[in-house]
Each structure stands twice: as structure tokens, then as C-alpha cells.
Image (spheres, one colour):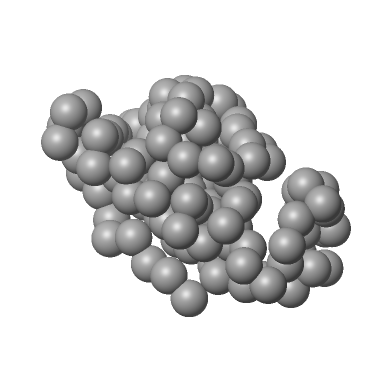
Amino acid sequence: MGENHDQIRIVQETVAGKEITLAHVMGGPAPIIYQKLGLNPSIDYGASAIGIMNMTPPESAVIASDIAVKSGDVYLGFADRFTGTLIISGEIADVTMAINEIVSYFRDVLGYVTCPVTKR
């Protein structure tokens, strides 16, 4: 017996809520960011933007992807149904509109808790 009876075992669980925890637009990011993320290299970097989102449950990224590509001229760079991450790129106005459309739909129609859309 000895030492083991003093140890406490803790089990942590995460419970997926319905929320968007990150919704950010990066206006005019450096070309190296596009290259490192494997995004569409044939764009006008001067007028470009990258939008990034994270949501739970992670399958929500599939719905968000559909809304993004239907709401503007955006390139779907990455959508992961296992982590809930979505990355889109395109012109600043299109990316901003797509991110705002996603947040509005998830908040107003699906009842998600959403964070504000940030932009830099």
C-alpha cells in the first residue's frame, strides 16, 4: 500500500457548448502568412484578408464553411470538423461580410453564444 493511498485522481471533461469563441479578420496580412497556412497564393495581397474562426461543437465548421462560400467571393482555406477551426481568405470586404454572416446566423438562428467580430 504505502504511497498510493494519498494520491488523488482527477478526470477532466470538456462539454461542447454552442459557441463561437473566435471570429477575427486580418486585413492585409503579410504574404508569408498565406504561404505558411497554404492559402491561395494567386491573390492581390494589397486588398486581401484572412478570416479565422473557432467554434464548438467542432462540426459547426461545416455549416460555417457553407455560409462563408455562399455569402461572398471567398476562398475556403481550411475547415476542420474535428477542431472547429475555419480559415477563409479573399478581399477585405468579402471576408468581413462572410465572418459577419456566419456570426449572425449562428447567434440569431442557431442560438449560439458568439464573441464579437474583431478586425485588425
